[in-house]
Length: 244
Image (cartoon, rainbow, N blue to C red; front, side, top):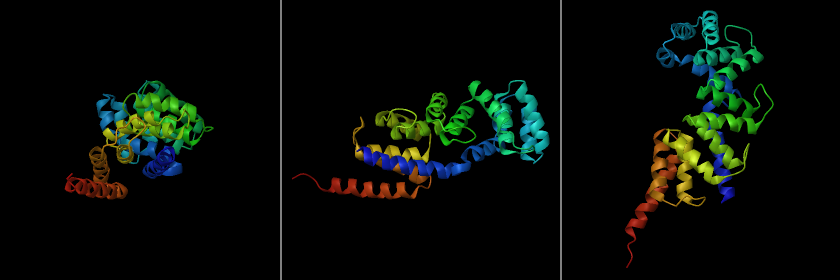
């Protein structure tokens, strides 16, 4: 069973890497967050952060950098995170890793779940810091406790791999299922595989497995679509074969 689970974990990791951009995952994720932060900025009731996001989206990177810095110094978590990402990406300024890490940590310490996830991923990948899966696990836990879906998936992968924590398939399932319920396609596929095979504290249930595969397939996962079709046929055959 463990070998099968490890194979599933490897596939999950590959899917997650593809979603996040492999080696550049940290930076790509950060830049995307800056660009898509308009709604959160509006909800922050911080005019300067809103202005910074507008300038960033308009390509006025120098102005955005200055505005994010000023808002960050006043304690805006979103500004701290976005300022950190611009420094790490070298957007509107030369790359400044030390300063970027400092502001990312400030946002994480201020309990911004996405900053906690990105900070953990930095240690998980060994990006800008020495790889430290135990430290990554600590930050993933903080973010996942707030319902951060990508952190939930990262935790599940760690528990399944025994990376940064003891291997624990039952805990892996708990976090895969949370991420699946949060809409993550990879987690939906893996959760389906747990229900399809059973074990590790999970009762085998092909109908539930098929439902998770269907959810992943609806998001464009071809492997999940194939699994959904296979289980549909299997369940149909079981229904047609009635006991004498």
